[in-house]
Amino acid sequence: MKHNNLAIEYEATFCDIDVDSLRDNIQILWGNLIKPLFPQKRTVFHFPQWHEIAGWWLRVRDENNKITMSLKIMQWNGLIEGQKEIELVVDNYENPIALLKTMWAREKAVQETKREIWQLDGVQLMIDRRPFLEPIVEIEWESELKVQQVAIKLWFHRNDAIFDSIDYIYSKKYNISKDRVNNHTPRIVFDMNNPFVTN
Image 1 (cartoon, rainbow, N blue to C red):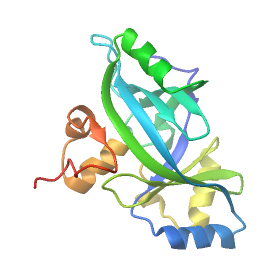
Image 2 (tube, rainbow, N blue to C red):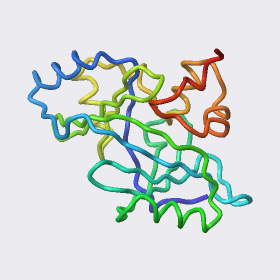
Image 3 (spheres, rainbow, N blue to C red):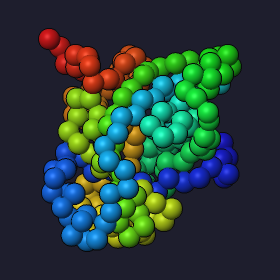
């Protein structure tokens, strides 16, 4: 299926980072803190039944200072250009959720994160805390070359970069399937027991 009008997200993710060391390195290189640590909440949807497309999903996210509704595409091809999206800014969290449900989109999960945003050489760095994972950083910009350059400056190795969605990171850490993360875990929030381990 063609989707040439979707914006490519040039984004590399690195896991299990030392947040204090990364902050120090960014500041040594004259990077700036754009936004201190803040909470995010998202509700993620499957497409309506019989209209599903592999790797496509819908998301409504409260980003603390704005609410967005997005169509996301993950091609799972191991390439940095495999992530695409269309994003709209909306005026509240509840209305787009109601709209998607009215269109028979199927809610699959409510998820929380905590994020701080830095900038280095014009490139955005998002340091994320997610429930039941070690901290990760996403390096994102409109240019693949700039993402690579900033990653190298911060001593990240390309072989450690992940070009995939968060379900891959959970599945790798807990040795579980992506299907379990995507389709059988309706909540991934901080105030809950770990749903990926057996007590």
